[in-house]
Image 1: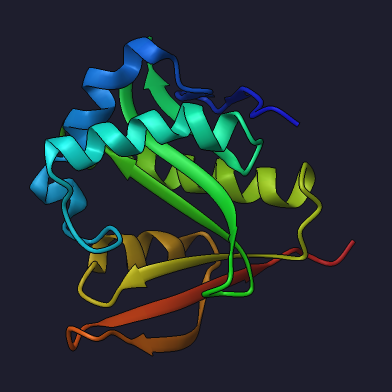
Image 2 (image 1 turned 60 degrees about the horizontal axis):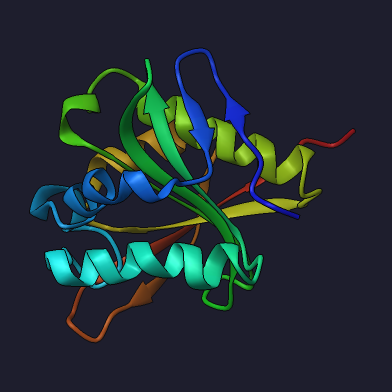
Length: 170
């Protein structure tokens, strides 16, 4: 099933377009945005290669859902929901460009991803993995119902928190 378009009060989540390359690379290579993502900030070359794989692998093979996030027609972020072995379930991933920080858009975006996981994918639970130093994301996810499940000790000495939110009983 191709990645669908989602709407919130202020955001539009839609499949990436090739002309999103510059914005996506800028976001994914931003050191402040990327410091808590995966293995840290990407170089512009790594971000460009990742953007290319969205089309050649993710969309081409229908691997998982990944969106460009827009507000008022402008690119403001990136979002995904995908199955990962690290949590043995589906994990949400999101990043917003710095000008979009502090306006409640992260909360709106995370809620939309969780709602999609429950309502469209039919998941019983949705996970997020967050560096323990990423206090803003930990607080955001706590506000929308995520709870701490366990910690993962990373090779570099850091700790990743595994958070989960369960679907409300019918």
